[in-house]
Length: 143
Image 1 (cartoon, rainbow, N blue to C red):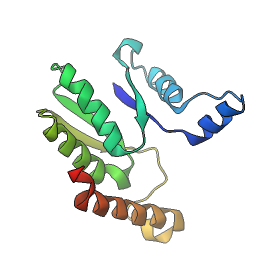
Image 2: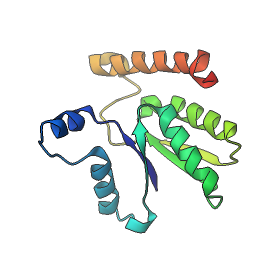
Image 3: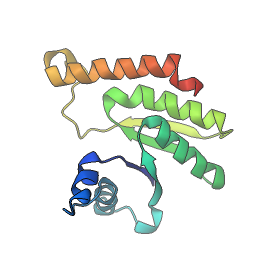
Image 4: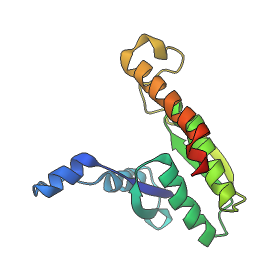
């Protein structure tokens, strides 16, 4: 089980004023343990994940060092799954990795892809994701 630490601006701010809260990475780690993933099977890749591209970079760098892994499962939001797949596929290809990528949208969300246009928050997420996808296709994949 690999994961990259996402940037957590709230934690960064609270740490700066000496108000301790658990990091997102710690919360993810604890959740995995509660889901009965063995501690020794969890690999935490240090490095700030500012974007999906950053996460794909850190994971591909790790996978180049461990040739025993032949398959990756990416769990992401349903609206983000397509772009996540494209980013990881591109990054792995550029790294020379022959790894099967599976993407599974998380079921722990209130986003409804069939009626996204009926809720303002869902419509905003869809619009933002389309902009990010277009940016990735025209600019991001060449970086």
